[in-house]
Amino acid sequence: MKSSFKTIKSINNLILEILFPSSCLGCKVKGEILCSNCIIKINRTEKETAKNIIAVFQYHDLLIKKAIWDLKYHHHSSLGRRFGEILYEELLEDISDLKIYTAGSPIIVIPIPISKHKKHKRGYNQAQKIAKGFCEKGGKKIFLLKTNIVIKKIRTIPQARITNRSRRLKNIKGAFEIKNEEIVKGQTIIIIDDVTTTGGTINEVIKILKKAGAKKVLGFAIAH
Ligand SMILES: [Zn+2]
Image (cartoon, rainbow, N blue to C red; front, side, top):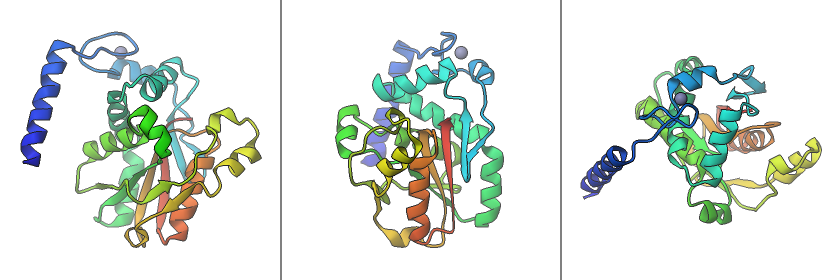
């Protein structure tokens, strides 16, 4: 039943794609929401933007800024999936290193959760969309997407709105909690977020996962 529903859904997507082919946000070429020609031109970061946190693109690049804005505020959720694929392709080397580390067992992938209120307002968690595209690109043997482990328990002020570093850290401290702790024990985990600034949010999640017994935790983000 579930698979036939999925088939209908993918046929539906295919029809939509034929009727309204997506065009690139950067150059308007048809067929891809962010085409590879435009992706090549986006400014990269120095990768490890904070300890254990790797971001790919510079947030002040106009195309990236627009794409993330559309993903978060204009219901352009398909950008999340595309970002996930890009994240996988860009960080292939880092993923290979982690694969050696896990010696064949899958890496757990956890998107940074948003509050229930925000999820209701937006209709989805953008980091979860990115994580889904990322996991699908790598395949089931490599990644295990888990959305029921880290929960956002309190609403916080958006980190980007706070300029003071120590206030940012204070804002996010204690905002998350772990459910199903037994799943993370001894595991290698990748946390996924759209944008990381000082790394405060990802670090807070790394901290609680480590406390719950995770062996190695890395944070991957689209932009810094
Ligand atoms: Zn393009």
